[in-house]
Image 1 (cartoon, helix red, strand yellow):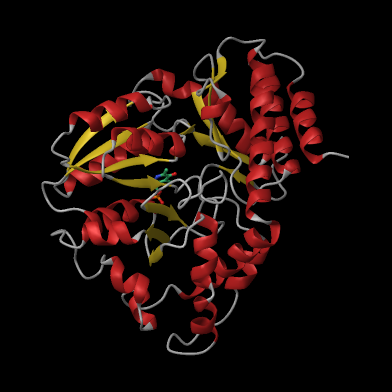
Image 2 (cartoon, protein in one colour):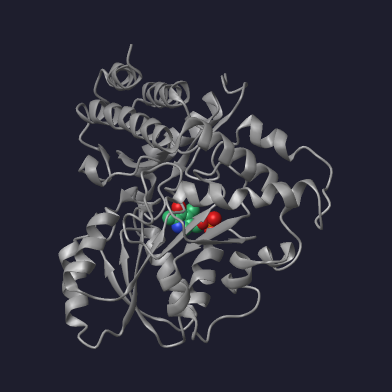
Length: 402
Ligand SMILES: *Cc1c(COP(=O)(O)O)cnc(C)c1O
C-alpha cells in the first residue's frame, strides 16, 4: 500500500517549498504595470533584497533562472578574451565554467572535484599572475550538487594576501537565505541568487548585487547587450527599465511576501534554523553510517558543509535510487538525485542522493523526512546503524531549548 496521500514534501534543493503566504500573495488579477500597487510595492523590495545579502550595493533583477545569472554577470563584467580564475567544488562550478567559456572568457579552473577548496592554491595562482591579467575570482558559496560550502571570508583573505586586484564574484543561488552571508563585510564585489531556493519564490527570477568597483571594472566590456545590461535594471529610473520590458508581476508579489517572512523571522534566526536542521540530518547519517560503511556524507568536515542541502552516499548501489523511489511513492517525500556525484553512466550513480533542508522548512518536516528515509531503509533491507532518529531529535531539542 501507499502512505503518500496527504501534503507532499519536495525535499530537493530547488525549487524549494512554497509558503502558503507566498502562494496567496500571487492569487490576484493582473496589476497595472505603469502605476499603482505593483509599482509602489516594488520600491520597497530593493532595500529588503540588499538586507538579505548583507550589502548596500546595487541590485539588478532578471526574469530568468540561475543559469541566466551566469550569462548576465559575464555579459556585464567581461570582454571576449578576458581571463578569470574559477574555484570549483562540484557540478555547478563546472557548469558556470561552461557558460563563461561559451561567451569567450578564458577560464583558469582550480577544480577541487566535490571537495572543499584549498585557498593556498588560489593565493599561489594569483601571485603567479604578476601582470594582473586575472580579472576576477569566481566561486560558488554552496555547490548544490556536492553540498560543499566555501568559506568566502577565507577566500577573500587569500586574495588579499596575494595583493591581487581581481574582483570576487560569488554564486549564492543555493545559499542565500539559508547560510550566513555578508556581501560587504566579506569584501565581495558581485553576488548571484535565484528566486526558487532560500528565497521561497517559484523559479523564474534572478538577482545580481554588484559593487561600484564591479560596475566600473565592467564598463568597457564588449559582451554587454541591451537586454542583459545591469545598469538600467539597477538604476531605472523608469519602472519598465528594471525588467527591460514587462515586469514579472506575480513573482514580484511573491517575492515581497517571502522577503517579509525572512525579515519577520530575522535573517540571523533564519540562518540558525538552517544550521540546526542541517545538524539533525548529519546526526542521522552519522548514526546510520555507524552500522553500514557504505552510508556516508559527501563532505567529511562539518565546517565545509552546506546548511541548505546534504549530499550523501547510501550503498550498496542501486539502493539510493530505490530508496528515493520508496520515499516518494510510499511516503510522499521526494529526495534529490545524486547530481554530478559520479561520471554519467557509472553504476555508482545509484548510490547517491541529496536531502534538501532549504527555505520554508521546519523541524517536523526535516525530522519527518529522516523518519521516512529510515522506514525506507527498513522496507528495502538497507543495513543501517541504530539511534539515528533520536540523535536527530536530540539536535532539534538542543537547538530549540526549553
Ligand atoms: C540551482 C543552482 C544553479 C542553477 O540554477 P537554475 O535555476 O537551475 O538555472 C546554479 N548554481 C547553484 C549554486 C545552484 O544551486
